[in-house]
Length: 333
Image 1 (cartoon, one colour):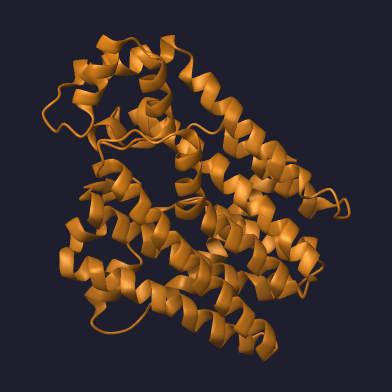
Image 2 (cartoon, one colour; image 1 turned 90 degrees about the vertical axis):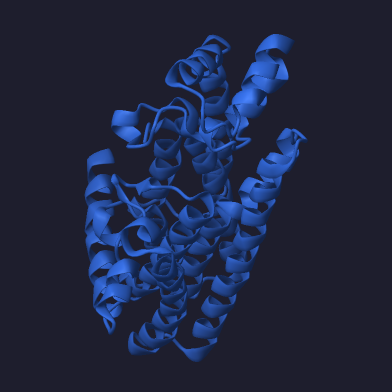
């Protein structure tokens, strides 16, 4: 099963990349090159894959879904471009960030172009592939709604990072649900809507996507702190340097001794700490079993996601979605 899914993911990724590259063409060329900078640097395209498989699960046509999936990937890339600007990151996927490679004004415009291109893609290709206007309006509505939710989540994350308060698990999950899980949830809903699924099926797949998205972010948080830089292509302990109050850091702060707690708090967001400070904090997390605890929590969300698929008929699409939920918990990059 894993080999089949991996092959399908690569195949859909290639189609999505082709559609986006054909759509993102115009003048000035520098702007359009900036817009596809991350597209051409790789990536698994999990959200588009889940959208297509949710469409298949609801007996829809994957050829129609692939264009809607491409719009979703444009939105995802829009968020990456603007996130990197807000965090002033220098590298993503092993390449310079858009605003570093093309300059800040082009970075802002490239993000805007991707977002507008996504809505145009839904409208244009929705009609071109024979979706009725009712479905197209509903797809646009879902995409717009979840872009708003995502923006709220990003603002919540920024407020958490700048605040001296330490959020509890509930506050953190609420932020993650909006910031990250929103696009997973929207992807699954849009796949079901494209297929013409009923409201119950759309809601079940929304729940699946939401839980998968939360699990994805929990593992992303773990990788951001203790991930191998050779695999992640980011500096070791990157989230500590950026001052992010992610779940692994929150769990560590809550359970470590007062001296260790003060030391970690002093490191959060510090640009002057050396690698020994970071490695010391990571060693503390490993000794406390934070890796195991975060993966167990992510695993519970993955279980919750799989449970939302019970009402659907067995088949390759259902098995693929179950596999994705498990894969996300096990990943290391």
